[in-house]
Image (spheres, rainbow, N blue to C red):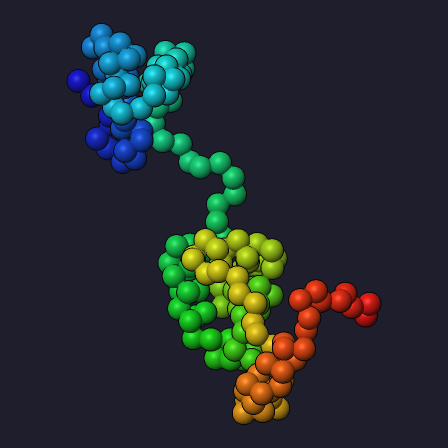
Length: 169
């Protein structure tokens, strides 16, 4: 006999806790219940003590503690789409996303204010990793750089002795 309420949807964790209570009511030992459910005996002990003290209703799911997220899962998906369009598509100079720029985008598009530190956490949550952009001069001559690396750099490397002297500058 299961004590789950069919009118209320519950997670598999809540169902597992309620199944432990049902097995206990049928005379099962903590060791047998823990083995049957694939959990530790300590977890079963905790669940049974809670249900005995405050009633089996304490084994159901409860809302997660803390403030609810300001962006819904759908909005997070939309944010990913906005970010993949690039920063320049949203009026920023240069195609680099910074936390401050993402915070501005969220404020403009969703009307929700985030501190840049929180934006970093939000970006990690949606699978974006922090990147440091490579800063190069706009007037950089790739051919001259390649020539320097191929011709001048090997000559400089050859001049160094086995024991490099420390620079004071």
